[in-house]
Length: 633
Image (cartoon, rainbow, N blue to C red; front, side, top):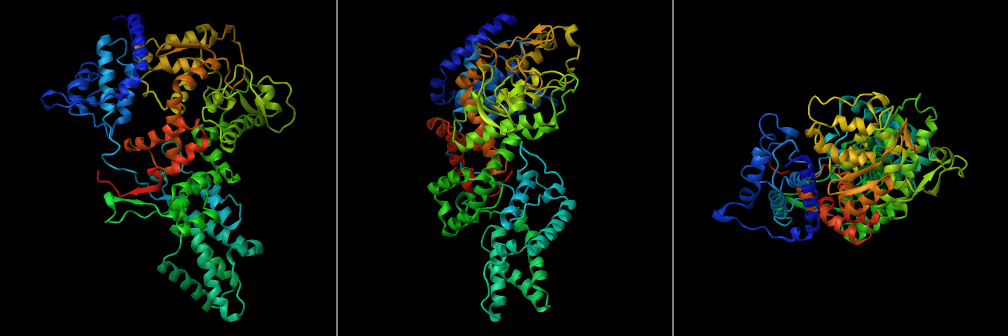
């Protein structure tokens, strides 16, 4: 089968498979003869013939060793892997076209066989809500918590070491370590906060809520005030032991004839350096909890809610509901989530979720070539980031469809950004909502994203395509083969960028991945490296056309966005759900989390893809409301 025949055949197969996917998903797994599993009989022979040669041994291609799956697919743990394998075969990326090719009948057979194997995933066989590693407050959460606890907006975390990132976010428990220098910073910060709090009579009223009527009540009232302050700081009621410890500390200072100010400073600093303040503590299941799983109590749920949506501690309404035990009711959780999304503090989702999912935090750090782009200054660069932040905030506040991230014809600009986009009727530094011209649609045509995915001197279809696969479709390409050179900065002497890319991917092991990745990137080629519109690149006319695996053709960004919404909305919805669930839980997702992901995606599809549905379904999901014991490896 030559390359062109293979492409044509695979395109037909892809259309056939997609058009019959609903029937295939409905198929029930069938037992093979002689007691062998469906996988051993129908899947592994194909894998052994076409995959094992490259994907085995000490250095398997892409780090994937199929030999370890000779006896079974381990579908309960490796579901995503087999989805990925199925997609690579369907999209003619594997086997590479320079390798021996399966017949069309074999391709149809293996796609059906893998789907049957995927259908055996059992959400009811074992309940695994997962277990979050105890998490310290990250830098943003620390500052916000101090702000909401004491009314002090000091941003002391700027002096803390940078938070490590895991699974794309900086609130992941497994990577939030405490280096020795951070302990020193916590102590210094607590002392600074205590001094400023005691020196400010407004702020002191947040701590000294109750006032003694006479001298005989002073100690009792002081203990009550400190206990309630500690409960707010720890985000739960104190145990009897904790009450005795904090009361003992206050009593000792009292007996030393310390001043009220000295006592308050000591207590505040002690509370703010306590692990129960610095960490988000959740109790593990007890030995008698069924299947080693327990429901989180209302105080734990209050903290999960508030740090998810506000990156801060619960407010008084959440504490009130927690004391009454009402947050354990799903309808109350949903109602509170909607209330919190409407609160100004929900801007934390923009800053901390969108800022990391869309990598907006990196935009001010980018350095495009000033000779090629002399009109780019710091204000324009900040305006680019602000556009995307305001767009995300608008989706949250107005409960819009998440599909608008792909195809919305509205955005937010000020005068400088409007001029960059070729709009001439916007004046002043304030941002306002505008209708986009026909060429731009959704966040992928925002200057912030386009600049993030470019090189300093030119566009990069590879980076843009990979960014879409990673952050929009959750279909990350495998790592590139070793010793593949970068595309040379040869300018027009080497032809157009598209011609250079075609030469660069002449190696079929590269072309298999680049065929899809580059097509996505070239759909955005009308936008230069800082997001400005162009019809030419030097002396070459821009060709923004492309064809995706499966035969879908497009010409330009608007048509590409249309295909993504029409053909890939389920993949995008699943991608955003997984990103948001990871951020909400503070841990990476496992195969067993796909059951919760599937339920959330189904609810989004049934509710017009509204943003609030994404949030309310997450906060009532099993991974968010339950905690599992540590699993034996």
